[in-house]
Length: 322
Image 1: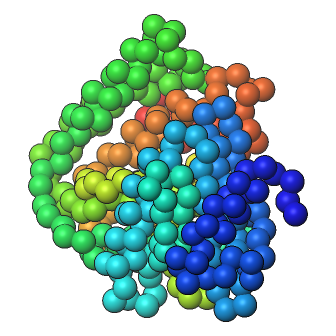
Image 2 (image 1 turned 135 degrees about the vertical axis):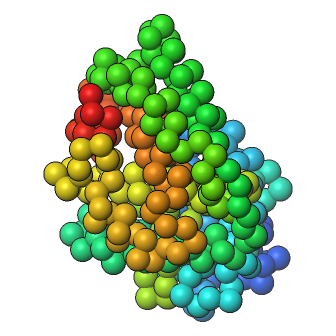
């Protein structure tokens, strides 16, 4: 038996709900495959293996349970909307508790894009396949067209910079951060009122939330249902990739994403092109958002955060030309 008391609690709940799902709980073996324990976040992921079925159980122990319920509801909608394409999908959700603290979904074999890239596999195929998955997801819901309004993000960055200047918020290398913030209004001016495409959001696109395996490409960990310009999802994924796996030397001055990064992704994504205003503008916002959540003190950073910060600062100097 696993010693983590959170696993014991989750297994007790599993035994209660399994019969209602048509399963004999005692016929399943379980293994903890992921856990997070932080002051404001605590959750576990357990793989359940039976004679004929493999399942994933997720249990959260902090106030984020309500968000997980909404996330699972969105994942199931994606599963249903994308069911017509065998290459792409989202794991089927079998159960969500009333309070959202426990969910059961089907197990899908594969590894995340992050794990594939950490193993040294060529990035181009994963950029293309992620782009194709996201195009399938966006297209499976209703899309519309509207004018892009960057002033929302301009105001957001203004508020962030004011807090940094007032020492209410600490960020690493704050002088460089603030110089970059000052450039946002001028960059945004290039994209006011340009046409963009709006669709249902995944909401948390990153290299750990796309699974690639023998059955195809699957999306994980959706945010609550909402819509936005498709560039939000695109840029969230591409910036996570760029900050961790892109070679900064490939990036031209005045840009944040390398041509090979965007070209690779848009070989698979076809709802909009790389010239879309949200795709062009939002990398400058996203890099600041990612930067501001990294601890200012080096001893408080994880290895992944330190690695990300080193790249962010190089990309910021190139992209903002400061």
